[in-house]
Amino acid sequence: MRLSMSDGSGVCAFCRMSIPESLVEANGKRFCSAACRDRLAETETSFGAADSHRRIRPGVSGLDSSLPNGFPRNAFVLVASEAGTRDRALGAELVWRALQRGEPVVFTSFQEPPSAVVQQFIAMEWNVLPYLESGQLHIVDCFTYRLGGQGRDRLFDRMGEWNQYLSTVARDATTTVRDPTDVREIENKLDNALEGREMVDDGLVVIDSLTEMGTLTQPVQAYDFVKDMRADICKGRFVPIFAGAALGSGGGGGDAFPHDLTYVMDGLIELGLEEARDDDRLVKQIRIRKLNGAAVTPAWQSYEFEPRTGMVVREPGADEAVGDSSADADEESVGDSPADADGESVGDPSADDDTEAIEEENR
Image 1 (cartoon, helix red, strand yellow):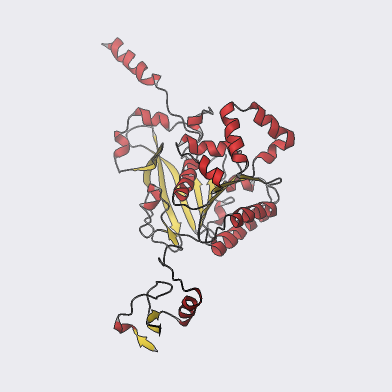
Image 2 (cartoon, one colour):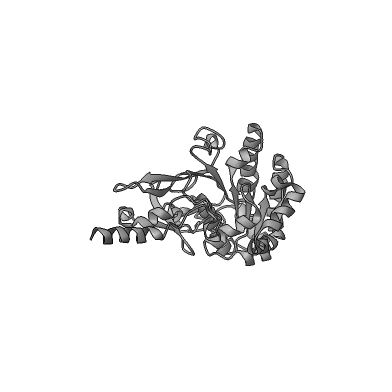
């Protein structure tokens, strides 16, 4: 029996979406279509939350504040970043928030070995060791092929005790790609990792980074890889992909791969640097430039990363109130200390002492 919407029919008993024009009734329940009626009869289970399998909250403050209605699960998102914006910290936080939601994550690394990937999280005081052990976090390693068979053993032998431990813990949670110049092998290893974690309508994939991947393959192969992964993972499995890409000198330009594929990407997140108004400091900024299928506030927001907390968005004008210590923290570090896995310096604590000494001398 078909009725009009005017009787206040509400939402469908199966898909939990609104009934636009008319409804189908069966066994005292109301449906938006015969397909939903039949499906409920087959499964005897309805979707408890209609939107839960289609949208998520990333859990990152700089993204959530620009996404009033959440994030589409079937999106391939390019994260385009300038040097010094801590793009890897953003990738680490996206992974960490997904793990906290109970979702599986596959992290594909072209730029660092698995032990260094784990170190990114530890630098933010996020303990991912239990997730590696349980298999909830899996690493697809496209980096260590550079070392060759003996080179890997030599790298391990040269590590300190702590990094050797991290490497050992990550080993069982890592799939190694023998030849990343073969995009089909990468695709197969990714597919196996997702299949092993039953990642459909669930989970997250992070690729670090497409810029490095583009240096390993011919352009046509790189383009096909992006399009195939978007079709198979995002559109087929309903699993989002966040793929990093460098901007600026030494990292590719805005019209080179993969930035010339923005018409294919479902979303574009930009990380940039802006000079502070009162001094020469560079302020980190983030905005979502586009995201298909979602309401977006495409405004620049200043941010910084803090251990445990993750990204912290600063209110307009707050940057001028921050002292020189934060400016020092933004400078690039050439060290490899555990607290600096993301390539950021924590400043020189002796600078304040020098300033005090000069003031005392002047007095």
